[in-house]
Image 1 (cartoon, rainbow, N blue to C red):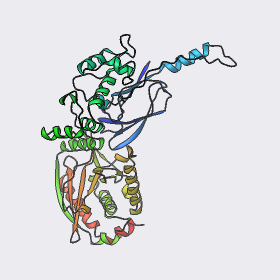
Image 2 (cartoon, helix red, strand yellow; image 1 turned 135 degrees about the vertical axis):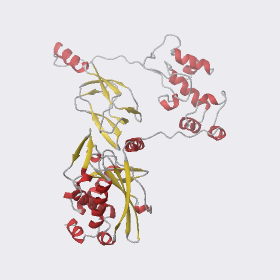
Image 3 (spheres, one colour; image 1 turned 30 degrees about the vertical axis):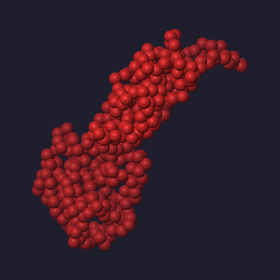
Image 4 (tube, rainbow, N blue to C red; image 1 turned 90 degrees about the horizontal axis):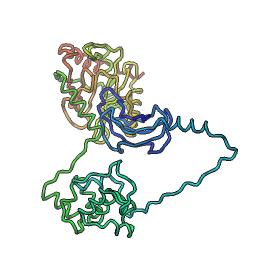
Length: 429
């Protein structure tokens, strides 16, 4: 019986995922619980397991492929283990089992690599080798597809096989790869691949270098395709979800004079802001609300998603139960999240469970901006730069959950806390 390994749903917001790496290959025997692959989604790379034992029958997608949740990625034959067990039980045990010689079928090596799908796809209008293409042929040891391609480009398969330039048997991928490497330099092929060009655009029968390909690109103004990676796709998903919410904005300032006395290399402005907002959320419960299936839910603790930059992207790890932690604990947690992001080890739990968000761009010199609400949070605070001891804060609020008056009370609470010396002393204990 065939068991399909599908792209799992690793978070509530996940609609698709990217296969990062296979830990298996066709023919491998796997057992229930074995780690078989790594997939990326919602800004995290996670391992997936098989829940059936058997032999890997087929790999359906290659690493780097992005597919919707539920898409089959591999097939495992679960009958293998049961057949093997039955056969073992039926055979009499020998004290010294005999090893039977296995006849070896040799295939002549090809001088041109043809396993790269990127190289194969450069020829437009010709199908790639499919799983159904036979591996042996009586007439010249070449598949019908291989012969069709060879005829199009004037190649003599039998001669090339005798010269060792094509394998025996020859498949369509082998012929395509040979033709490409014969008439295009490696740099030219790389440009063709990156710009998704067809090799048929260039004159046949002569060698083309990268300068010719680049000239074609510039003359015809061919854009460079920029595939969306998973962090970018996750951002688009968050933005699309945020656009469905009826939001309003509220801007005010907090006095940073007292805050600056407590800021240090470890206890940064961001760390103190997390603690400030966490305390304000405990005093104004409306920012601990979420709306799920038409029902309001009030959460007992202040949990905050915080924008953390890595490279060109922003990630939103969640600081849980901020009200129960000191600023030193929050600073340590922030460093742990930064390490996880750098090593791409964020988990589903790291990215869920918040009701409010913070995005601090003050260190970039931006005075004021609006931020998009993260996932199911009720609001987010956009933190601008400090000018004359004043920090600009702009709230983006989901009007279904928090009304304007409640948001104003929250902002007043925040401003009062920023000038409360007792709060700062207790937060460091």
